[in-house]
Length: 306
Image (cartoon, rainbow, N blue to C red; front, side):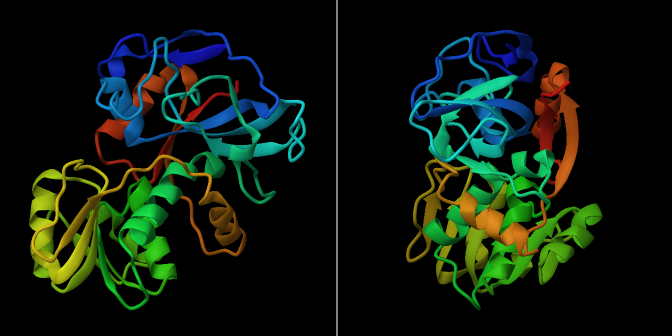
C-alpha cells in the first residue's frame, strides 16, 4: 500500500512516499481504508528519534496516529463494526500507520463517526481532545470556578483545552497571536493575551497552567500560579514541583477512553473542531513542516484518499 515512510531519524525532510506491506489481520482487528490523518507534535518527535525510550519504532515506519476512514474488513471476533462503517481512532505511537492508505487496528480502539461529523473533523479529534482532557482534569485536577491559563490557545490541543475548561465552568485565560484572539474568545476564553504584544505574567492567582510551549514560557508560568497551583506540561519531561506548586508532565498514550465524550459533546453542539490546512499524501513532508512552524491554527491534516 502507498504510505509516507520513515527509514532513518531526522527532520520532516527524511520522509518519503512509497509502498509498504500491511500487517496481518488478527481476530480482534479491523482494516480501515484511511481517508484523512491528523498531524501531531508527537509525530515530529518520533521522526526526530526523540521518543525511542517511550515509543520505540522500527524502520520502515509509517508516521501518524490519528485517522478517520471506512472499515474494509473485520476479524472473526469483531462484533461492534462491519465493513462500510465510517470510523476514527488513534493507533499506538510505536505502531503508527495513519499516514498510510490502510491501517490495521484493534476494533475496540475505533469509534463510529456521527453522521453530522466529517472525516476531516474526526481525524482532528483523537490526540487533541484526549490530551486536553488528560491535561486539564487527570493531571491538572481542574474544577469549576478555578482559573486556568492555556498557552497557544489556537493550536490543536489549545483550541480543545479552551473549550473543555470553559465547558467545565473554569475561568479561562488564553495566550494567542493577535490574529487568533477572536477565535480564542469564540471558543470560550474569558481573557485573551496577545503573547507578542503583552506579558502574560501580568495575570495572577492561576490554579492551573497548561504548558504547550516549554522553555522561557514554562519558566515564566511559575510566577502566575497560586502557592498551591499546578502546571501540566506537554513539553518538559523533567518538570518538577517547586515548593507547594506542582509541575507534572502529561504522558498521553491512548485516546480511546476520551473519544466517547468527544462524540457526545460534538453531537450536543458543545465542541468546535478547528482545522488549519489539508495536504495530499504526496505532500506529507509539507504537512509536517507546517506543524513544525508552531503557528498552525487548529489541526494540520493529510488526505489519504485520491
